[in-house]
Amino acid sequence: MIKRFWQWLVRLLQPILPPFLKPKRHRRLQKRLSDAEYQQLFRQLLTGVNQGWNREQILQHLGYHSSDRYFKVWLYEYGQQLRQLPEADHQFAWQLLQMSGVGCGELGEIAAEIGQDLLAKPSGKGEEEKEDKGDEDKWENAEGDAAAALLNQGKQQLTAQDFLGAIASFEKAIQLQPDYPEAWNNRGLALGNLGDYESAIASFEKAIQIKPDYQLAWYNWGVALDKLGEKETFTLS
Image (tube, rainbow, N blue to C red; front, side):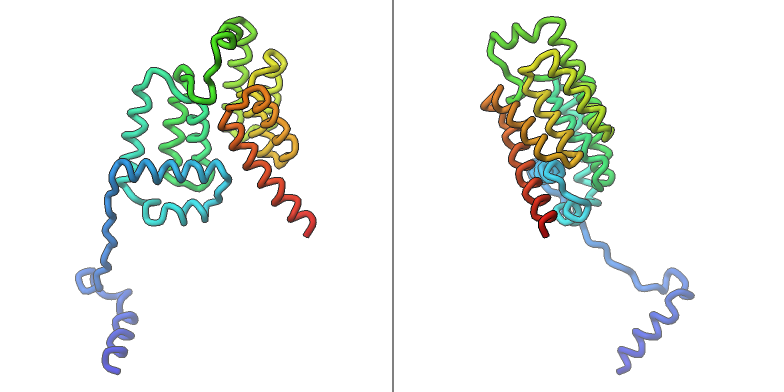
């Protein structure tokens, strides 16, 4: 009884108490993870963002790491390492840029800065960009250079959420190089962002038809199929 009365009295008087008499609140100490653990946490976050996670899902995944200063320091240092490489994976850079607009806070801002810097570097040949010798010869001409420029322009428009402009850029690239799998894949991404999942699926399938081992296009195709199923279920209900 006395204890409850004392607690009530403290709450009542707390606003007017001098600072040295106010009860201290204990901060939860943040545990610093290893670099490998931060990298795994970040990769999972990046995958979730590209699957369409909302702010609530992002915060649920990060937990207290959403305000973890060590995580931010790790991401900054990771970005410095990527900037020092002679080439960059532009697809990965675009994924980093996506994080700035989906509720990732300061982590998203740091990731977006890294992505912008990586897009300014020459494109490296990741798994999805490797071509055989005959294909390499084909890209080394004026039309190939123009198509690549349109592809990069479209990616920048995607980042700015100008989806119609991005589609127009990708389609111009496809007109120049009809068997350009990355242009078809990114066209599908833009269409998916507009909610046109059927057209997006057809675009991903075209990319896969051109390049059957295009793992990123296979992944995007599966995500679009799931989204289409959700949309049809919602419409029917």
